[in-house]
Length: 315
Length: 286
Image (cartoon, rainbow over the protein chains, first blue to last red):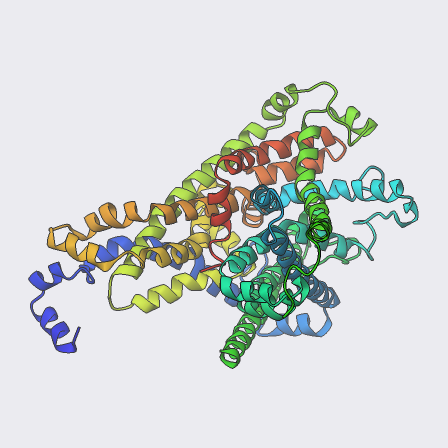
């Protein structure tokens, strides 16, 4: 549509406007958009701005908030070793669980793709943990890790490796990794489905040509399938990594951040500082949330930039 | 190039079988790993705690259906279940209607501020809940919505609007424009077009978002744990956590509670597995 036509429409509103299905009356737009925008303004935009405001104040119950400038951030970065412990744990979690999620999901998808019998049924069963809540998954795995009757130790004893039995969630050396295993178990099916869709979208003739060339399945995987899945792999890596930087539920349910801060993550620390510690200050945890959000934003931008760069180089 | 059938047919079959056996073994093991824990809980939910401690991995010797009645009436699971149902059904209904309205506008109409509205709404997808949870706690206290199901519903709708609009807009934008031009010529009003063309054609996409939102909200924990503290307001995930905290050792009863939470999801999954898989992964693939 040319600009002149647009101007003409604006000049003579009623008949052309009524016939142009790309335009709606102001009343229609208000009716359709107002509920969402009001809700957003009050319960998304305002809370975010208020958290930023909170982060430069000290806010105690029944008290006037006191402006403290960047003190919260200084304390946080300077001498809050629990925060740094939490950052370290979250980083370990995000890095290792992401790698395991992506590789494991690919492995499961390849198993289904290579025409294992009952593939449709297996796909449904393998996806089940994705649908379950963290509370359900967490409690089941707390039992599995139980020292006396949990499945992990029962199996170790049964195969004669009783020496390796552990109080999996009670020992600071194993707790973080045990929670991680549970998290990976819950999300593998999700990555599997995405990879499976990508595998079925691969051009059949390329895979067929590899077959004719008598290419072994491993060579086929390394030289053909994985390069062609690169966009999916990068996409899932970003999604998975960013999700794990915010991890709260499973850690809170299984260990509450303990023992000895060995599973404390940034999010559980925010919650604890706000509601469990008797500092009763909402300003300091808000500062943690703001700082962490900015770091997550940087990661999202950096990772998407890298993805774009890669795509440009390859195609 | 070597001919593919350089080996004898019987030997080729044997190799194929060997290649298949580890795959089969892997498939079997992972099926037990992913599905086994749920079967285990299902069995424990029908056994009493003394039976479980005597032998944690045995099949039920006599089936104790009455545990479900006990959980429902004596342990408040009935209340938790209804709270969850009220919150999730209301929030999903509101999300679907409000989300479809926004998605229709963004996908169909050119108007000033279209890009701004899209940016504001979709940016909700990268905001971590942790960034809003502390101030939402303050805000709901001030609005007297703290510790109410209404407050939780509003927060859920605001929080999940972004992904809902994202999925619906992608689908709505693919509906051919000709349909809308024709409807306009036939004298349909804007709202009639939304109601009688976009919504009926968009049913598959609406189904997808309903599934996704239902599962995520039925399982939601973080907002609920911060915004609800009274026992008769708790949703199922909170109720189970609370019960677990008070009855650490009553494993049998906790398992029954878990089954009450898993039950509806498993039941739906048995009938609509494809829809649910598509729904849960909808935001990630385009």
